[in-house]
Image (cartoon, helix red, strand yellow):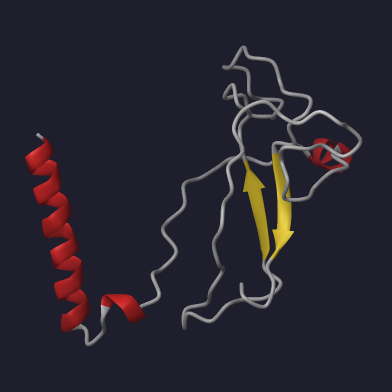
Length: 132
């Protein structure tokens, strides 16, 4: 099984390199497209959004609380670029995450019996800088 997986990855990578060369480019100088996105998560109702005072990009610390959220901290880094691979300044990036116990903060989230983490922000926003 492991050999088949390694072979599949190798053949897939080789196909990508060959396809790239056939189009006149190299793998190193291409701008990879943004992958398709799945539908969701879903915005909370407007009243819940308005009630959330803290909308920054640090989901581990809620404004006005001293305790941090449960679970490991995950740092995400990336860039927002246009079709010509140029960085886009001022793009609004929204961050959504479930808590450490897998609970998502939405009134219709009823399938998870775990409690909400009062020290976790669940969603936030960031604006891109000149580097996207």
